[in-house]
Image (cartoon, rainbow, N blue to C red; front, side, top):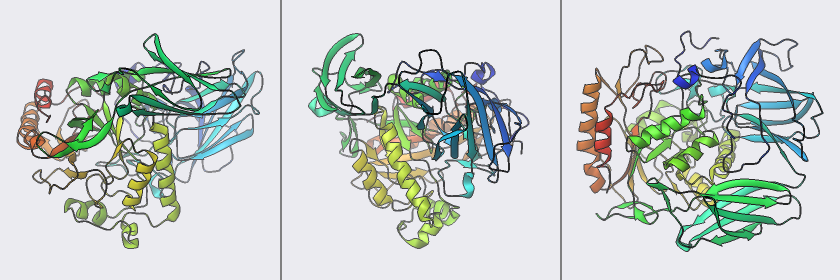
Length: 579
């Protein structure tokens, strides 16, 4: 089934070099010298059988999903089909220093991987990275890798984000297969396998925990630019930093970190920052950044591109989105129902952009009663009741267990990212169940960050925030002892002919011209947002950074070519969004 007859390309998609796709090192906080990128031209086939076909359908550009224009395919994988990928590679001379690891940034949803006919592993889950040790399967000369993918999309309880086979409104084209970088690295027989970084801001220390194979000691060096400032030896050390430099959106300073374990060497970075709760000068509960009240003024960021869909067409495309938001005066992005490539978080770290990170939702066919009626009316519903499991699409125990497992994996994956300051386990009741338990789980895994346990509605009376999504009614909330955050609002839309994905449109309020939407945006901020920063509001999240498919409520068009609201007006109003 074809997805689109008239694709909309970004400037980066138009310039795409199929021999140099997303070639930057994909894991900035865990870098090694060995790196072989396998993005580029692969063979693909879509079949009904589980067995690899004798012939393939054509070429696909990895890591773009076959549904996306940049893949060169433009075909929707269906739940009763299998997608096969194949390519060959040859290890460079001297590449193998002991073990060879194969990494996948993300494959949606089920993947089985073989090297030279030997199955090396399988993975389930469309948004998390995985790796296999392929040492025993590779050989000198040419090697063949085969990946088999199945994607049931929204027909099952798997985490899927905003993907739907029948897209429309706030839900987008379902995607499948490899959608993040595929790459190889080589490590010694004994090597570092894990790194955990915890800034201890009030103590002026950084805790560095490593796991490694073998008996060698792990040596640690910390740098301020080119200057080594301190070091330590051990698998679990706490290092004091004299007169340390704080990280903030205004001053995003990063320390460099070098680890050595025998002959293995890893480069990383960290930042000294603290996120906590307190009160502002008006006496209202709020968030503190580095022990000072700090208003979070942000945008909802879906992370979709008009030509790569889930996959950014280039590193520069990711930078453009973050830098544009920062240049407009925003200090936060809420990464909505998606886990980005690790380089996106790196750019937030180095550019200075706070991140609220959503968990990716799943479940089976929520009812509108649960995700719509009760939410809009702010009825408090018990999300532990079995009848509400049904409404939330969570009757399947295996689906609930998968959500819990992937929540743990998400926190582990992103724990070291300085820019992430807040976790969002559930959004608008989508697949929500036992949110109190989810809150306690995430807090136990990461006590250093804050948690919006049920963004928008289905508040279970726990969590760090009183969180509301308000699009249609006056902005207000019954304040309690938790900071009040307007975790979604706005959604103002205007057409941008020549820069739209489809003629069908969706937004929360429509305007005819840039001038009229700019005037409406000004009224919204001057009457509803700016005054409330002094009346108990601790954060606001405007919907949204960019248009996405039918949604035309973005600051920017889907192809990132036009800013649809006057930039000077946005900057002027943002300068007033503070305590």
